[in-house]
Structure formats: C-alpha cells, structure tokens
Image 1 (cartoon, rainbow, N blue to C red):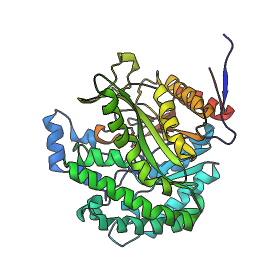
Image 2 (cartoon, rainbow, N blue to C red):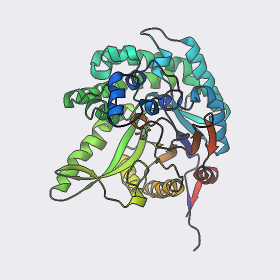
Image 3 (cartoon, helix red, strand yellow):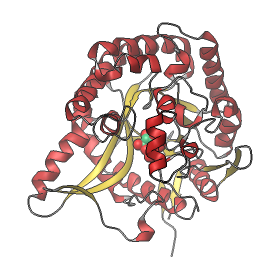
Image 4 (cartoon, protein in one colour):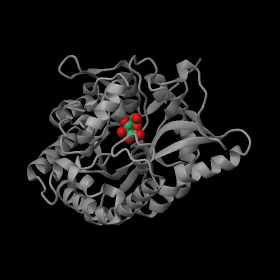
Length: 405
Ligand code: BGC
C-alpha cells in the first residue's frame, strides 16, 4: 500500500505538556499537599486497602531542579514548544509575600526553554492553591479573585519576555466538578451551588486578568478548555446530548471567548449521553487506556470543528493516554493526528499539538501508577529519564511536520 502523507501547516507547534504540581516536587505550601497528608485522606486510603505513601506527590519528578535535562530531551525529540506551569504557592507562599528567589528560578527555567528553541505555554493555575488562599475560601468567594489577579500581574511582569502563550486556568470545569461536586479533589465538597460558584468566579477572574495580561505583555492568552465529544444515546438522547453539550463544551468558552486570543483544547473523552445521564462508550479491552478510558480519536475532529465557529487559532494543549507498556501510545497519537488533520482541512485553524505528558508524573488522586509520559521516569532508579519508543515515533512527526499513514 502506498503511504499517504498528511502535511501540517507551516510553523505548526509540536510538543508536550505538564503542570507545576504534577512534576516539580516539594510543593509543600499547596492545598493538595496538605490534603494528601490529612488524617481524613489517609484513613480513606487505608480503608480501601491502600498505602497513603503511594499517594503522596513528594518529590514528583523533581522537574523544579531537573528542567534542563527535560527540556534537553524535548529538544532532542524535535519538539518546538512545551507547556508547563508556575506554582502560585511557591511564588507567594504567604499572603502578600512574593518570593523573588522563586521568580528568579522560574526566569531561569524559562530562559532554558527558550535556549532550547521551545516556545512556552505557561499555565498560571492548574488545580492547586496556596494554603493561605484556601483558608480564605479559595475561588468560592468572588472577592478572592483579586488575590489571583495580583499574583498574575506580579508573575507576568517578571516573566513575560520568555512566555509565548499564557493559560490562565487549566480546565475550570474539571476543577469545579472534581473539587466541589464529586468530592474527589480537595476540598472534597459536594455542592452543586458551590461548584457553580467556582465556575462563575473562574470565568470572572479570567475575564478580568486576560486583558491585563494582553495589554501588559502583548502575548496571547487563553484557557485550557476540557472539551469532550458527546454523542446521543437512546430515547430523548438528542435533547440530553444538546443540554450536556451546552454545559460541558459551550458554557465557559462562550463566556470567556472575547478575552481569549486563541483556544486551548484538552481532548480525552467521548461519552454517550441519554436521559439517564452520561456513560462512557462501551469498548473492548484493547481500546481502553490503563485508566479504563475509551479511545476515540474521531471525537477530536468533532470537537475541533465545533470550536471553529469562534474564528480563533486553536492549539491542542493536551491529548494523551496512560499506557505503561507503551504499546498503544504511537497509534493513539497518530490516530488523533489523523483526525486533527481532517479538521484542519475543513477549516479549523489548528496551529499546534501538545501531547500530555512529556514525562510520567503525579496523576492526582491516582498517585504515580498511570503512565502518561513520552518519557518514563524510573521511580526505582533516582527518577532516571528513559525515552519511550512511542516518543521517538512522535519525534519523527515533529521533525517532518507530517504524518505518514
Ligand atoms: C489534566 C491533567 C491530568 C490529565 C490526565 C487533564 O485533564 O489537565 O492534569 O493529568 O488530564 O488525567
């Protein structure tokens, strides 16, 4: 069979993503760290027969110190961009005290990325909060958004020259659902009203801070939106799907789009929606990731075509899977890119693809066992980095700016 060659647009960005808390290590001033070490959380884990130690983020990947090595690997793998974050609780460990040494450190990190030819997407909030901010009620209170805005202004002023793209928030809807509706993330609340208030306050904070970021730094700003492919199922499935689609895929984006210069898309999920709720599509074992998530590459095309109507550049800020044996990753990436390419051909202005994640990292409530990385972190051998085979296959795509199928 002759090969089909799918070319990507000139200057397309290729890379991988991560977040501060999941990779840096030692973020002791966050609400997550406090929660992991709380008696309640540890008792819950013990009751499930688990060892709490396996669920401590601890040193994570020590990315805070080993960033040079990781950027070097990304460069070696032909990436031309990277996404990572800054940890608010490090920069402002106490209310109103900004640690200049930490800002210096982030400056060095950003310089190192730039020196490796990596354009940077910098995330300002990715699920974690400083403990002092949590004690004030976090984003539950509208007036607290002022603290976030102050932190962003200070950080941006210092780091702006090395940042190419800002992301104010990572997945506001996931944050509010997991922390305030399902009670999975700290502060483990289960209140529909609180979760609604959080979404509203994050939208408010984004709309206030994005124009400031834009004016003061001149760099494009967005949110990493968690967008899912929803398909109708059963009687009244169409109605149920439309309603869910509005709340899952439209509500936040519509209310922030005027303050987004581009659209950050995180794509992982495809669900069937009926009047009885949402369910994962049924799939045979081999179509599941290690976390049991179904693999539906075709959904990314629908998601991209849905956001095409906003007429903004689109960057895929996350797409990936947990695959410890590395026997699905290459196909997963290629299949998704096939559908990304189809969306581009139909007019979606997609300008970059960042795989989640560059290195195996702390997968929140699951601990370290899910392995998302292009690069393995050997936790038995001093966090040694080992490039996975799939990473070398992705590197070929990045280098040639094309996919061969
Ligand atoms: C989050 C990441 C997370 C990934 C895999 C995304 O929704 O932004 O922090 O690790 O999903 O679960």
